[in-house]
Image (cartoon, rainbow, N blue to C red):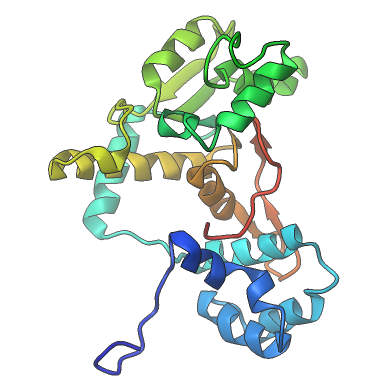
Length: 273
C-alpha cells in the first residue's frame, strides 16, 4: 500500500529482497496453506492451484515446485511492454528475417567472465586437459553450444537456422567460420554488437536502442524450437520461465520447451531471479 492508501503490486527484480519474496522455501515453510493462497494468487493462481501447491509442497522437489511457479508466471504475462516498445521490437525482429523454425543460443560473456562464469570456464578447460594458465581462452567456446544440438545432425535432422544472442559478436563470427557448420545460416541481432554492459551506456538514446535489442533477443530466445544457454545468466533463467507452461493447462503438469544447458548447473533456481 502506498502513502495514499492505494494497493500497489510490486515485482521484485534484484537483490536480497527478490530472493526473500520469491523463494518457495520462505513462503511455504510455516502456515503453508494460508501463505500459498496469499502469494500465489498474485501471479494468477486459482484457489484450486494455490491449494494444490500447498498440499504437494512437501512431496515435490524444489525444481518441480519452481516449474509450477514458472508456468504460473508465464501464463500471467507479468512482463508486458508499452505499445511503442512492442512496435520497435517487432520492427527489429523483421530485419533479422528468421524462419518460423530455428534454434537459438544465448552466449553471455562480457563482464560475466570476471566472476560469475569464471569457475565454469576453468572447469570446462580443465576437462579438456588445460589449467588456468594454459587454457586457450577465458570463455567457453561456441563449439560447446553447437555440441548440444549435434544429435539432431547425427540423426539426419538438418539444422538450417541458428539465432545467437550474444555480447561478443566479433569473436562469435570468427568461431562460426571455424565451426564446420557451413550449411547453417547463423543470425545475430544487428543492433546489439556492443560488448559493454547496457547500464554502462550513459547516453539515453543508445541505452534505449540497446534495450529494444535486448527485448528482441529475449523474444527470439523464448520462441525458438530449441534453446541452448546456461542458468549462470539472468537471461537464461528468464528464458526458462518464458518457455515453461502447463502441458494440459493443469497445475502439476508444468514442463519447459526444449532447453539444453551448455555448461554450469542444470538447476535453474528460484523463479524471478
